Length: 441
Picture 1 (cartoon, rainbow, N blue to C red):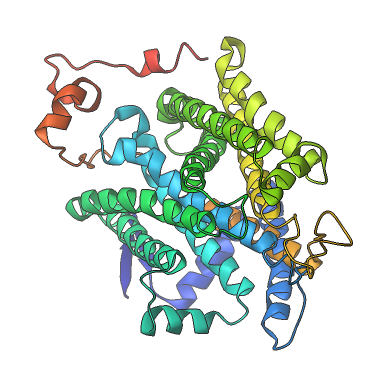
Picture 2: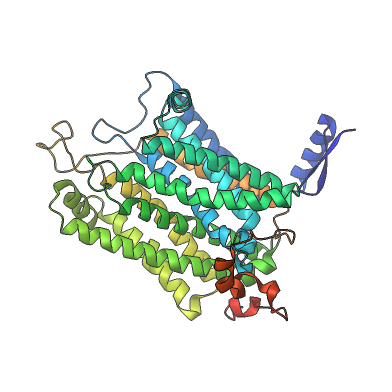
């Protein structure tokens, strides 16, 4: 009988044995978990119907128009694409630089990053209607002067690095894993920066245009990835899943640190953008800014500002709310805030008409209402990530491994950071976990 070892478990490659094991597993699955699976499967089924409707030739099932060409599918693509980069950026502090408090991110970030990136690819493929043309065009007719082409290249390479990272992690190839972590961390910086350049180079949409767009995309990526890790580790600690002890002592404080950095950076960049827009003499830029302050985009803008930035920052700053629950709530609010922010970003760049076709004479703003098909696809994307990650959490060993070695930094970098990144060099090993946890109960 043929067997294969996956993540330390022996699996029998026999249909009869697999069927019996599946029935037994379903029987011992808790009722609440079955309800969770059922809900996610229903949402994914609805999304599959919507996806099928987009493929039929001539089918116009999106709410986009010639004057508002990029809808919520583009927003969702950007959201998942930057989330996967942000996950890797946060985890690189442990996997590459060897800082102990970030090591619990290692396995969970890789699974989430891989799921987020494949979901982003699926969404953009549906938005293009005929994704095969994109594949053949990018491969056989490359355009090295196009930021969009380089975005596809970097995210494609990033996917390869993530696959190697996950494979080497669960199959015990530690040497390969070290280099895969380094490669994916470097690409995690290039990919969202290039994605920001795709928007930042569109001169016709002045709200997007500018050098700060790639920078904002990178900071937002860190916020999205950190917030998702905060949600995951809140659940891990509360449900006492694999590695929850180190999650409570190390991962939760690490999430708070990264959230603080990302939230402050996002507020600074948002303030700079609003001030620039209010003082700009460009009609589209100024109009988009006013649309967010007191126009049709005002409600989601203020929800994002207060609920997605200010309140999470307060929760992780006050000693009373610097707890597991407070960090989880701050992460959830920040995560939703990033999603709203990406919707605002894509919408604000198109809401001011720039041509007569867009309605310069007849209306001040361009109207857009997402269709049920678009909404079903986006909801199914979140359901897919949640469903597969739940399976990974249940059946894979996601505890922190002791075999991982940080990538060796050059001497001139390692020397000033040695006390932070190379604790093994100390004459007497310290136990900093309790101090890092901030006295959290």
